[in-house]
Amino acid sequence: MRLTFETKSAEETQLLGQKIGSLLTGGEIIAMQGTLAAGKTTMTKGIALALGVTDTITSPTFCLVCEYSGRLPLYHLDVYRLSGAEDFFDLGAQEFMYSNGVTIIEWSEKIMSELPESTIIIKIEPIEDSARKITIENWQHERIL
Image (cartoon, rainbow, N blue to C red; front, side):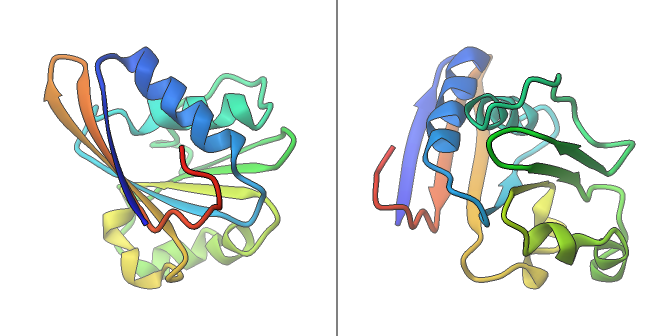
């Protein structure tokens, strides 16, 4: 299923992330796509809030993988600096992807061929100022946001 939303601010993008996170049950892989400063980490912050994560969520650009505890484990990866699939798997990606937690991968465009067909794809496109067009593909949960 494909869903499209428009948010007018970072706060609205985060709220949409909270709605998404509230419906996650574990085992989901979310491929975040969008340009620099599109709102990928902002969306992740909302998902993390819904998962009960109390730590501050930051972009994992320099650490590559951040792990957080909540009602479900959250694995937040950034593959921007990776050369490709081999580097991705060297991170231990399979451990995260096939866990009972939620795995969010920023800059997933680089490794899409390595992700399972069930991967939820969230594309975030800046429209103007803080407004964003957000498209969610492969949403397979019974409830619609």
